View 1 (cartoon, protein in one colour):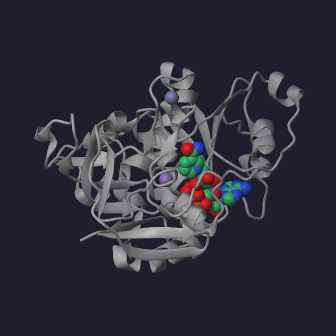
View 2 (tube, helix red, strand yellow):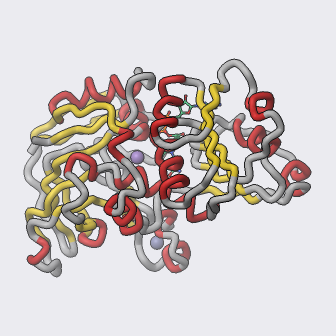
Length: 336
Ligand code: NAI
Ligand code: MN
Ligand code: ZN
């Protein structure tokens, strides 16, 4: 089989590898589509602190079960499945309180173990979620990025009367936007980005107001309107202090970023308004919810897709994705 391997930081190759055999409790997935994420690019360039090399990247993927390992029902052969990349131990403290996404022995498929930019991958059977026929193959790899939005919104508990502000109209901001609108019915959603083309995508995904904050600060553009719910899907460390300043009293803020750089916030700025701050990493068993939302048309993953490439052109696809945020949102690799 062909697999996209990052041999070491900076070195991407398409390698011919032996077909993997599913182990105890695993299934082998013949992969059809896999989408590119910023973190794949980070692993390629050596900027992901969790990655180990050599690594087959890719954590957003879909395919068909073509072999079952020991103790997995052979009835699962032929199932169309989306794969949850979060592999957890099941018995540590976070696992015991329903937070397997921060398991103390967390393994992320495509980061800590080999992933989905490959013709086949073996994964724990419980991570492979069967899809209804209503979800087309070409969009099924987008379930994973929507689980990020599902996870953070479960923390911030949106309501229709919220005034929401989303920083960033990249894939993460747009998935959060669609979930706030289509699942939670938030009436007023403001999206801020520095790139007009991305703001157009936000309008297409249901934003009520889009603001380009590259020249004029948001505080000025908001004209005193105070968001009650803020999601930071742009993740520059300067954003949190600004978000706290802009937020309404009693607002909730959700953070998705992994920056190692410091930012300065004061207790007073948060406690005086009793701001709640939530962080969210990956997803805790959110695949069933997202599959349900897609099935019922509550979210529109097709609006995020700008390109398809064959697996053989992975390097061009990842380069385009990285260098051209004006024209790219989700870029999907096809294995056929
Ligand atoms: P992206 O880079 O495509 O999108 C970020 C967007 O934010 C860009 O359109 C950019 O123009 C905009 N932006 C940058 N600075 C801004 C500012 N000060 N104000 C307004 N907009 C600004 O990235 P993507 O894929 O959407 O991911 C966003 C972030 O989410 C990344 O930092 C990534 O690490 C993080 N992430 C977190 C996950 C989690 O589980 N916590 C999972 C996936 C991504
Ligand atoms: Mn991703
Ligand atoms: Zn655990």
